[in-house]
Image 1: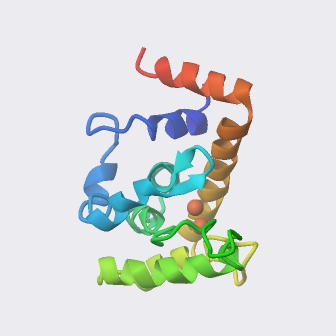
Image 2: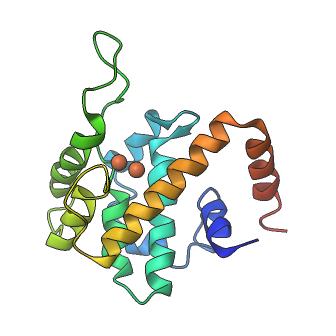
Length: 180
Ligand SMILES: [Fe+2]
Ligand SMILES: [Fe+2]
C-alpha cells in the first residue's frame, strides 16, 4: 500500500498512538467546539466537513514533516481551511451559495483569526489560497501548495467513495485491514 493512501486511511482511524504527534500540534484548535461542530455539515456527499479537514490536515502534516517543511503551520492552517459554519448547498431558493468556491477561503480565514488569534501571516495565506488554481494568486509558501494539493486529493477520494460502489468497498476493506 503506498504511503499517501496509508496516511489517508489512517486519518479515518486517528488516535494518540498512530497520530505521529498530530493532535499535540493542533491542540486547542482541532478539539475546539468550533472545529468539532463541522461534523454536522456535509462536505463531499457522504463525508462530513470534520472528517474532510482531519484528512487534509493529517496528510499535509505528514507530507510537510517528510519534506522538512513547517509542518506545524501547515497542520494548523489545514485544520481551519474550511472553517465556515453553514452548508454551502443551503439557500432560500435551494440553490448553492453563489460563488462559494471563491468566497469560502476568506470566510475561513476570518473565522480562523477569531478562533486562533495567534494565526500567523503564513497560516492565513495558506487558508486564503487553498482553492488555487480556482482562485488567484498562488499560495505564498511551499506549505500552502502542500495543503492545496492535500485538499484536492482528499476531495477526489471523498467523491469517489460517495459515488462509486467499488471504490467504497475497497476503501472499507483497506480501512478494516489497516491495523492488521
Ligand atoms: Fe475549501
Ligand atoms: Fe477543503
